[in-house]
Length: 112
Image (tube, rainbow, N blue to C red; front, side, top):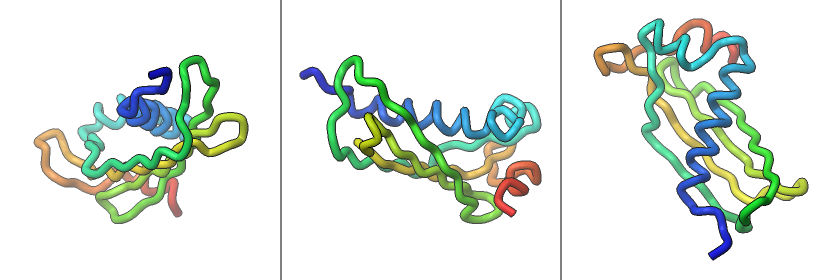
């Protein structure tokens, strides 16, 4: 069809939030080593204009602390300064046993 497959947006969201965390000086791998993971518990995408093969796009991610155990990321997919899609994901902090836990102090400190 010449359009980007809709599910690819969620892959792009993952790349954007991984980069967001890396820009804070920490990596998702570091967080997992410390026994915390952030599984997606909600995902949403609104497609405003289609992206096409070979379009150059920019992803913008912002994070909001919802509770001590949940974080929300909002995303904009931008082509030529036009927002072509928006979305969000909500994540719950889980310990190594798969039980809810508090977000690491290092992550929560980013929102103070």
